[in-house]
Amino acid sequence: MKQYLEMCKHVLKHGSKKTDRTNTGTISVFGYQTRYDLNDGFPLLTTKKVHLKSIIHELLWFISGNTNIDYLVRNNVNIWNEWPYEIFKKSSDYNNETLKEFVEKIKTDDDFAKKHGDLGPVYGKQWRNFLGVDQLNNLINDIKNNPDSRRLIISAWNPSEIKDMALPPCHAFMQFYVNDGELSLQLYQRSADVFLGVPFNIASYSLFLMMVAQATNLKPRYFVHTMGDTHIYSNHLDQINLQLSRETRSLPTMEINPNVKNIFGFKYEDFKLTNYNPHPAIKGVVAV
Image 1 (tube, helix red, strand yellow):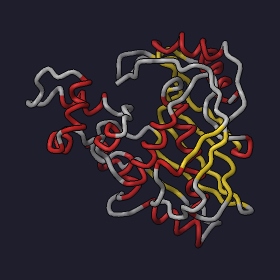
Image 2 (cartoon, rainbow, N blue to C red; image 1 turned 90 degrees about the horizontal axis):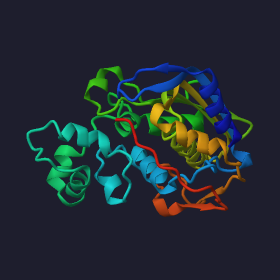
Image 3 (spheres, rainbow, N blue to C red; image 1 turned 135 degrees about the vertical axis):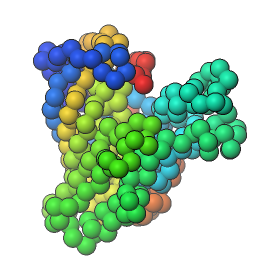
């Protein structure tokens, strides 16, 4: 994962200080691209431990078309909690509940979860129902039947529904590419949080590439990550520098149950990571 560390160095060296929506402040560059060859191993960061369980469950959540955090929190995945909680705090139902209490209500009260756990028409909605179009189902069919197409695309950016989303999509547009029995994927990410978000995004879309490849009888090859506003938050500088002081280690291997051939048939138990030996995790506060 030297590509990731080189990106960190680039942003620190060439980035400009910018204000942002969260009022945290960033060091930012515009336009950066990395490329990961899945033949080299599964691109899961080794300079800090990354929570793979969250990545897998979030991806399955996207694929299902679900937009309510109830599925995530009931699987002890807490990466989306802050956004609906901030919306809840502005509602008439708010009674000074802490974030922890809010999450517990989502877990245990179906009516509460239905009312306050939904994020609006975010990723899963757009992947599966973009103004009535099931983009993911169409993608699978197109890869199988027209692999040389230059329209193997899924877009999460739907201008007509942005206003209704708790957070407009950061990883907004993807394109697949078939060549000589191999499948590659390029992601365009409009906003890239280098410390917290990007390691998740690299692993998530690499795993998605592997799943789509298996569902279309192809071999996964390159994940290409193209980022727009590529930034390090001002409260993540120490964490980034700590990672830069660490040596990279060998990439792990991701094994997927070979019997699953339908993109909608995967379960959490179908994934097994081996030989993952990262440096210890590093905590950081998410900017909401």
